[in-house]
Image 1 (cartoon, rainbow, N blue to C red):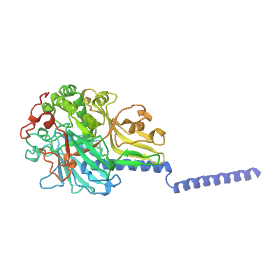
Image 2 (image 1 turned 180 degrees about the vertical axis):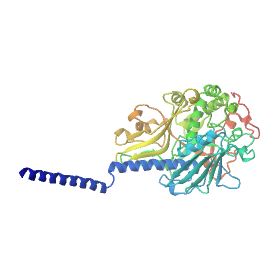
Image 3 (image 1 turned 90 degrees about the horizontal axis):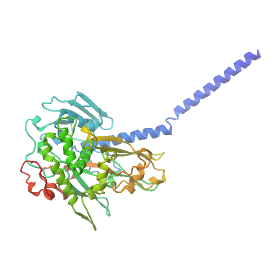
Image 4 (image 1 turned 60 degrees about the horizontal axis):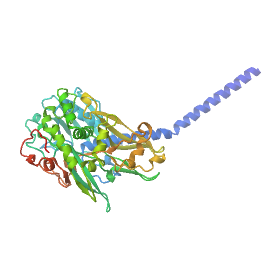
Length: 478
C-alpha cells in the first residue's frame, strides 16, 4: 500500500510539474517575440525599405526631396525612366538594343532572377504596388511591363524596345553635347551657412547610333545632408542613406574609369571578345560601334582629365581630385589591382539598433579574364561595423575616396580588416534630374543650372564640336 501511495504521489507531482512547465511556455508565447526576434524583424524591415527606395529612385525623380527625414514611400513623384510616349506620358519607352538587355534591366530594377527566356514575371510589394513583366515578340517590343506603383503617377507601362520597333527612327541625328567622362558641378544649399559642391561625371551619354536619348551621371565626391543619417549616441557619426541603386550604371562607372586608365587594354579586350554576346560594352552598346569610343578617345579623355585645372580656394585640382577626392596614381593602384578594384557604397544603411551594429551595401568591381575583363567582375557584400568599438566613434561618410581617415575604421573589422582601400558613396541622375528647372532634355544643349567643368568637345576636341555632324572615328589629339 505504501508503494502504491508513493507511486501515486510521484505521478501527481510529475503531472503537476508538467502542467507548470507547459503553463510557463504558454506564458512565454503570450508575451510575444523576444528582443532578438524584434531586432531581426526591424533589420529585415529596414532592408526591405532600402530595396523599395532603390527601385523608386530608378523609376522617379527623388532629387526634389530636401531632407533625409522624409518618408519617400508616402510621397508621390513623376516618372523619369525612359522616354515618354508623345501622346501618353504614363507610357515610358526604354530604348534597348537586345531582348537579353531588356530582361537584365528589369531584373536589376526589381532584384528578380529572370533572363531573355522568361515568358513573364510579376513583382509585388504591399507598400508600392505591382509590375508585371511580359516577354515581347522581338518585333514590336523586347518586353513590356504593366506598372501600378502608388508613389509614381502617371505611370502605367514600360516598353523595352528599339526606336525602329515603334515604326519610325526616333534616334537623334548628329552628335550629343556630352560624351563619356564629361564633368559638371552643381551647388546644393544645405542651410544659410553651408553649400555643397557636387561633381557629376557622365557615365553614359546620349548617343544616336545606340539610340540613347538621355545622359546618365554619377556623383561620388560628396553627400548632401538629405543623403546622410546622423547618429549621436556614441559621438556624432554620419552614414549614407537613400542613395538608390543602379547596377547598370555602377558597372558603367567602373568600366569608364578602367578605360580612361587603360585605353589600349580596354579596347583590346573588346576586340578579342567582339563576337561573344556575353561580353558587355557599357551595358548594351554594340561592340561593332567601338570606333566611336575607341582607344584614342579614351587616351584623349585621360589626357584631358590630367590637364584640367580647377581652382578651389587657394588650391588647384585636376578631374581626379574633384571627382574622386584622390589622385590618378592612387585610383589606378586600386582599380588595376585584381585583388582590390573599385568599391562603391550604394542603397544606404540598416542596423541592429540595440547591439549598435550597422550594415552598408558595397559593390566591388574588378577586371577578370575574357568576358569578365574591363571591370565586369562584380561582387556584392554587406560589410558591418560594431559602433561600440572606440575606433568607430568618428565615422563620417559625407566625404569618401581619399578621405580614408573619415570612414576606414568602419572596414577594419571582420573580413575587411586592414584592407586600407578607398570607397565611394555613389548616386546617379539623368541630365533632366540635374537641371535646375523643367527641361526637355535636348541632347544638343547644356544642362541648365550646372557649371561646365570639363567637356570633351570644349576642352579636348573643339573642332569636333559641330553637333550637326554625325559621329566619326576618334583620333589621338595631342
